[in-house]
Amino acid sequence: MLKVVVNGAAGRMGREVLRTVWQAEDMLLAGAVDVRGEGQDAGSLLGSGKIGILLVSELEQVLQETRPDVMVDFTTPAAVLTNIKTALKNKVCPVVGTTGISKKDIPEINELAKREKLGCIIDPNFALGALLMMHLAAQAVKYFPQVEIIEMHHHQKLDAPSGTALKTAEIIQEHKSNFKPGLNQEIENLPGSRGGLFDGSTRIHSVR
Image (cartoon, rainbow, N blue to C red):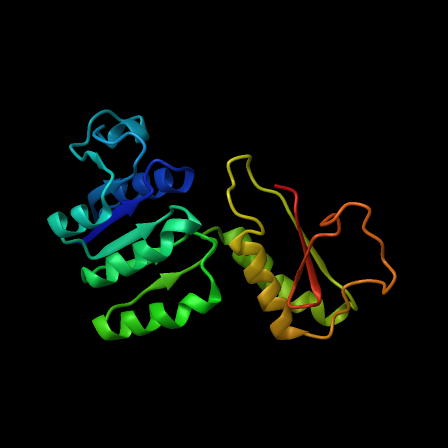
């Protein structure tokens, strides 16, 4: 039985993970962490009545009290790196869906995971459709001279571009890196109106 703590349990994805773990026969919901609704029963997030697990705001407290196998993190870009380090230092494997992790932080995370002899998964999107989109984008770029990424999310999306868009751009660059961002004499009447430029060649437009 895999013991799981859900960090960011009150968010949109956090609730889905919470529900999935709670209903799974081979997983045990060990704890739920979120500053929103602290002290409330986590069942209130599922609409299922009380489940006997209270929302707690301190991640390390929950990890030390419950000793889970895995921490699933859907929090914020500002908090996620600290959350990963906290999990690894407490001998817990992080599974991270939070976007906004900088590439420069990956070596530090990798080194800490190796030192603790633990696995760590960082995936900017858990949706099957997004994974298929990235795979198809990698195939399609071989046949086009130019590419731009346009994305739109819900109104509560905090970071832009999203981790999904950045990962897609990274995959595109791996398969074809000689794209030209546009015409040399392009004019922007409003700065940023043509999107952000990833690695000098792929523009990303975040509608939201």
